[in-house]
Length: 197
Image 1 (tube, rainbow, N blue to C red):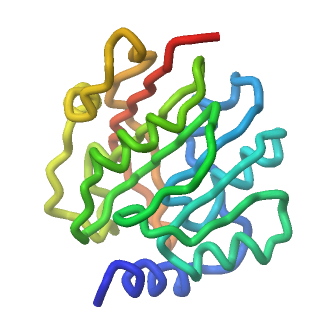
Image 2: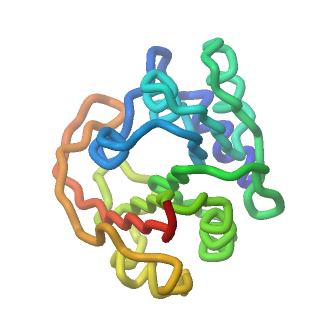
């Protein structure tokens, strides 16, 4: 099974209904003035839909054609693209680039993808990286090692003259699994801001 088949299978099994925004994106982007946004690994599209409803012009990208088609079928003013980020990257410049729970069991140079993402951030814009800091009981990735937000920032090695860290922390939240089960999980939250404006 390759990455496309894996993620297509996951999103084809997801129940119907309106996907929800991630808690971390809502708290980070909620106070921001809407502009252009790129949602990397958009999945079911909850973040993209939430941003669009608040006036953002959203590009949403995912390797899963099933996820992208589902988002396109909603008829919302979102540019939804099937993109294998291991090989390609969406065009554009963005005020907000979000990579939430951007993990995969397949080979991917994640740091390279995130550095490419940083290059698309406009002056004054933000790169938001939220990673799992613990595994929920229903997660496919029970054996993962979790880099801290500062370790992720160090791996990206962005120019400190051009980039500052707005937020780097481990934060707990209550999560709900696909079968309705709940658990306390940890998120590793990194918000980087590009100088300018």
